[in-house]
Amino acid sequence: MLQLNLLSPQLSTRNPKVFALDSVSSKKSLKLLKASEFNPKIYTLSPTKTSAKTRLAVKCRQSELYEKQRFNSSRSSSTDYSFAPGVGESPPKVFVSHSIYKGKAALTVQPRAPEFAALDSGAFKVAREGFMLLQFAPAAAARQYDWSRKQVFSLSVTEIGTLISLGAKDSCEFFHDPNKGKSDEGKIRKVLKVEPLPDGSGHFFNLSVQNKALNMDESIYIPVTKAEYTVLITAFNYILPYLLGWNTFANSIRPDENSRGNDANPRYGGDYEWNR
Image (tube, rainbow, N blue to C red):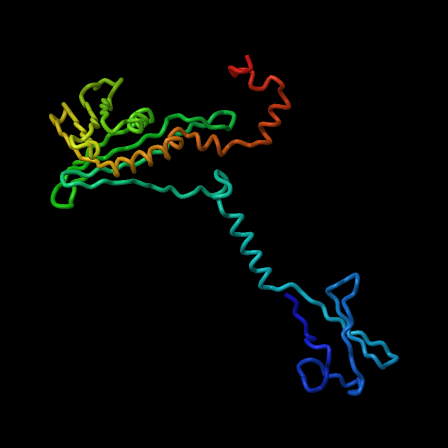
């Protein structure tokens, strides 16, 4: 934006805000010369009928508003961690879930992120793959569920793949022992069965939990329609690479680093099958 004190090429004493020309006769006319060829931001005013060449210069300056906007824009872009993950501030943790409510029970599905371990080289590797946490809660009353009595079941990526590939008339069964490999192995036994409904309208999820230490044997079941099952499978397909941690690998790929590795080592990738 140009801030000029001279708004019109014709000046007179009728506008006192522009100039008070006491030393120049009112009969003399002034003309606004063209911008200098070397500095287009400098304009000169020169009398047409006088031997004394008096030059008045008007300098334009950049708008302060534009400077403020540019400064604020640069600050916001420099502190926006979404463009540079892992640098500066960490993005806030977000929890998501999807729930299915029926008359006798409710089912909530929640993804859990993989765990990473730092290496001496500064890189990271997946220490534990992510999983899908299923939470079953029995109904306490109409549209009310007792989440204090909920039972949980964690689906591994392979078990998620089984549900994704499950046909309309297929069934599957998963067995879990949370204490497997420990001294109290076998005291808790969990079985998740997914079976087609008799009328073919969806699938039946049934979670049975046996706890010998508490002398508990509980079973919670919930029907899932075709539409609800499709939503689950669509979410499973989307989140599966993230549970494997492959998205972090894809984000870490740098074309320049790969090209340097190839140029520096002509046998780069020699361990791959197609290079043997």
